[in-house]
Length: 358
Ligand SMILES: Nc1ncnc2c1ncn2[C@@H]1O[C@H](COP(=O)(O)OP(=O)(O)OP(=O)(O)O)[C@@H](O)[C@H]1O
Ligand SMILES: [Mg+2]
Image (cartoon, rainbow, N blue to C red; front, side, top):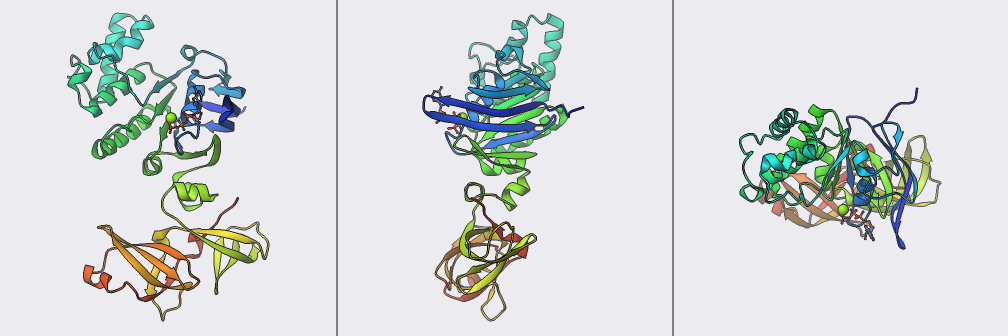
């Protein structure tokens, strides 16, 4: 028997006039999975969610829920609920009534309804606030009412379109934690949309990076961060150094790349000797040591930026390129200042440098 997926998209396309919002997307989202759609504004995240929910019909391709095709079914025929960015609570209804609304419309009988609303409010820890109106709640509490309103319908899939965007940083962190543990407890798939790369990395089982309607890369957070396939993914998630070089040789899983006067080993293959390539290395993977030691590349510290727990150095390579290096602040502040202008060697673990494709 084929494995049953909670959500499957097969070659889904959606255009608005000349704008290709979603371009030939295929993606399987497993039962129990917390998956995040990440990408810049206008890349098609909301459109993708709206097609899963049934608010938009794809121009071509299929959408399946639990193995059953739903591509053209209306939203109310799908076991999916959505929490929108503007959580749009009914201002004239209290918390209980807001959460009960969807069940009333479905004609759920009173005692069952009371029980389910109480359960949903308990899940988001809003017991005791049943009779408050939305304008008597904090932003985070309102957000949790919106969540309870979706959860009370007991969906198989919960879609969350930037639900935390309006919250301040502290509340946002707290809600991230609550959402994640709620998802694990419920055991249903959450499809979560965010602009925020850190949020995507910390919350997700898998991250889907989108760019202009396309899926750029799909993977667990570590893969997305440590092994980006493209410059777009490397640049969108975290800081990265991109170094231009030429392939000297390539074998098995390792390639030797010539950069100005040095040759560095890099993870990745499928390239030919003489070919120009780009190599990515994260700022925190680079170690700086004094110039006389053996390093991979040589350079000079051009500037320092104090970030509290870490310092961000800009290092001018002998070849003329500027790299960013991030170091934890273990040395004294005074020792750090004196380093600007010094010659340094740069080194890293061989598997920290990644060959970019495309
Ligand atoms: N109803 C519509 N009519 C016309 N164009 C639309 C419509 N909905 C979306 N688009 C266009 O489709 C593209 C994708 O939009 P979408 O809302 O999916 O992006 P997004 O990734 O959710 O962006 P954001 O992060 O800003 O919310 C954009 O170019 C947008 O302008
Ligand atoms: Mg959107």
